[in-house]
Amino acid sequence: MADSLTITDNRTGETYELPIQYGTYPEYGAAIRCGELRNIKVSEDDFGLMAYDPGFTNTASCKSSITHIDGERGILRYRGYPIEELAEDFSFLDVAYLILNGELPDQSASETWESEITNHSMIHEKIKKFMEGFKYDAHPMGMLVSTVAALSTFYPESRNVEDPDVRALQIRRLVAKIPTIAAYAYRSNVGFPYSYPDNDLSYTGNFLSMMFKMTERRYRPDPALEKALDVLFILHADHEQNCGTNAMRSVGSSHADPYVSIAAAAAALYGPLHGGANEQVLRMLNEIGHVDRVPEYVKRVKAGEFRLMGFGHRVYKNYDPRATILKGMAQEVFELTGRNPQLDIALALEKIALEDEYFVSRKLYPNVDFYSGIIYQSMGFPVEMFPVLFAIPRTIGWLTQWQEMLEDGDQRIARPRQIYTGEDQRSPS
Image 1 (spheres, rainbow, N blue to C red):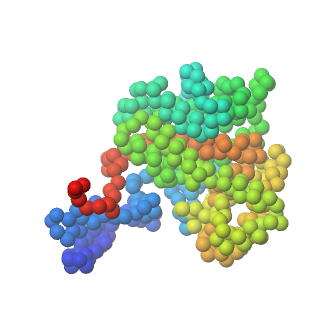
Image 2 (image 1 turned 120 degrees about the vertical axis):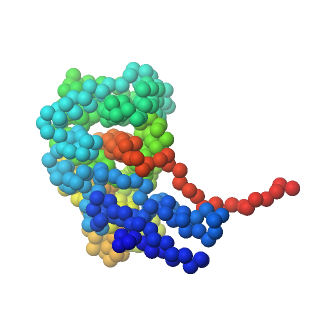
Image 3 (image 1 turned 90 degrees about the vertical axis):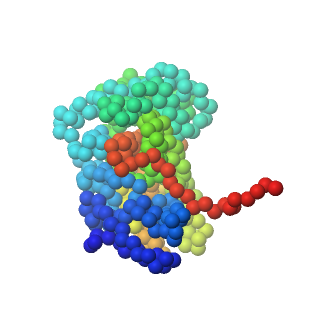
């Protein structure tokens, strides 16, 4: 068999031939089915060979046609479209439609989709009461996770996950309501009254209104900042099988409803190693304090005292294409908001890192978190809102991955194996 892997078990001398399977394109990755390893045994009583892969660093848990990342070449595509072109020419909702449906919408489909989302942006008044029960200084992300899970009780029909029409309705509800819940969490945290959705505004314009509207009759977002937020949302909409997406698929594999599944994914995003990375970048820049202190800080990083936050990525071994887009966009945002002094520190840090052999040899290039936090802060978002801002656009990616999982006949309820390292059978006497 040409496309196969031959394994010789030196314990027994037996040889096994395992078929190699490709995705749509061989260069995008090949795999063997791990179940085939179970045939490799030393005896009939043997459980069979397993693959041990902590963190799933080289294990494909699914097939997906949504997002392609080539970390070696710094490529990110949604449904085949380069992220650079989508961020330049399309709105977030149009990209969300693409992610969900596989094709970009024409004008009619775009208008219908936007209308469907807009019409679901309100949340039940009892949800507001629910959110008022949180402590006055509750973290917005903790409020988001809990409130999204609570939505499950408002839409009990959502448990019928095998019905395509039911799924479609919940997807629209969630994409629409997540920004409202996010804005309410912020307003609750700072003690401001809730600001209701404005159906005359765009998706991102409406979110800015619910966040920052004060005494004015109508909030009019600055078009440039509205576009910047649109781009940020596009860049965060999906990113293959990351921790949050893996949580969404894992919980969803039990046929849990999409609300509690999204809550699980958002809970994963809550962790500082996932959605909190851009906050860590800001803390690092604050610690450096001034451009003149950058060389000394880099020296300490190279000495192993701490990590350089915002550099390097689990997948990208080249410059993160999203960071390239945000680096250019940062200048445009600062023309409106005033230049953030942390940008000069960031640029100096980036320059040294890109030229220093220590970082180049380790392929530690800037990632999306390196610039996103600076931009969000300049737009007026508090640091506590950063993971929430990540969760809003990622909702469409999570839901699309969830739906793809439900429609994949190969998928079963997630149930990884383990290698037992405890005691063998023993008696308490």
